[in-house]
Image (cartoon, rainbow, N blue to C red):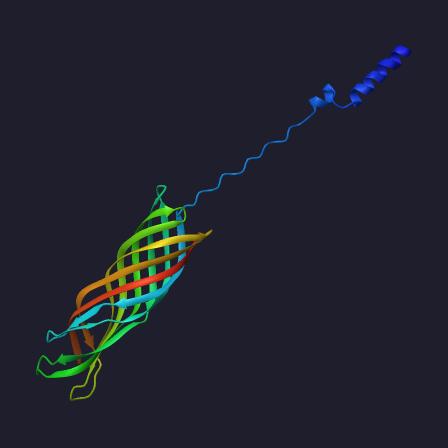
Length: 245
């Protein structure tokens, strides 16, 4: 009996005391957690945004008498843009963008009109405004830092022109006019800065050239004025914000 009690007490103590072989076998090690690597920023994706800025026109007209008059104006431009970019290497980005904006460009200057039948020459007041400016461009950019993109762009451009040339013949004052949409080209450069997740600020300069063409103005009652040469060029400096998704 004494041998049995001694053996039983020994078994109980072996199970109860810490540091025994059985307790060591039951120990579990905690896993070591590693921080996830940060996801690198990329310009790949699409965006939508708005822009505001200033515009200056550099225009010239030539009338039936061969007289050439320069008329320029400065104004405001504001509108929106939508586009998509693809970052195809660690630094190079290619994309497409469409823009549409309203402008306040408007200018008037004194001119003359000539009756091709009678040869009579009359003073006139020529007025032209550009109330719409749009473009569809391709842009190529280079990421100079993780969130800075320097780019150039180029493509097709459109502007809506409202033109009239008021004068007073013997029968009374008339105001032949026309509203046309001119097609040309544009080229520009700028910088894009991703200042927050999904947001970037863009600053750029764009040049628009709508060529040299003739325009026929009419009052619908037989009084017409032919502008033999109209050159329409626009410079724009804008700042905008884009939301990337």
